[in-house]
Amino acid sequence: MAFKKKIIATHKEAIKEAEAIAEEKMNILSKALEQAEKHIEVTYFKGFCEDFISYTTKKIVENNKALKDLNLSNDKVLNLLDINLNELYKLQVQFEENNTKVYFSKDGKPFTKVDKQQYISYTKNEEENRRIDAIENFIKAVEELEEFYHIYKGQIQPLTSNAVRYDLRVNDWIINQMFFK
Image 1 (cartoon, rainbow, N blue to C red):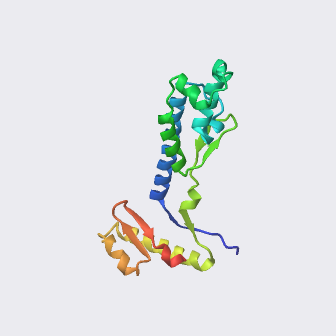
Image 2: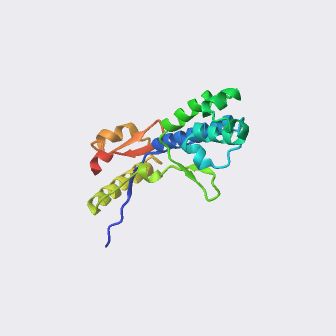
Image 3: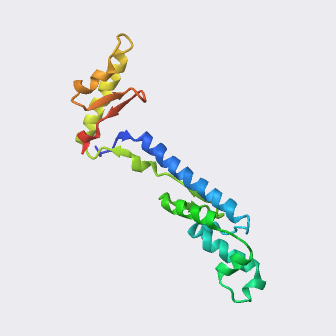
């Protein structure tokens, strides 16, 4: 019989945190687009995401060809047009500090995704599969017994040498991954 890995634990809180960080990155991008669109129209999202300031500055200079012909620096053009990009710069810093990767759909729209597989622990061999099966059978037996008697789930942890515990905060069983390393 071929080995088939089983799930030991899913780190739900870590997934929620990663999703919140990804959502924050998209919120920062949205705010940056708002700031930039006060001065230009953003048509190439990937280029904009690479560098908000240079993309916006380049578009502003392109839109003001008369000033471009005067051989002025980009900063001078922005000063003459009385355009301040400090808020966009702050958003750029926040955007770069957030390590979530931004992807682009076929039509060029930005999005993020969280790889949930990073937050799931799996068994590595048949021995660990047997341990997981035993723990799952134990949990099932405790829950069946609970139909007839009150079970103090907080006492399960010392009873099983810390192999499994019940987290009252989230009302769920947690398998100790240290037994599977």
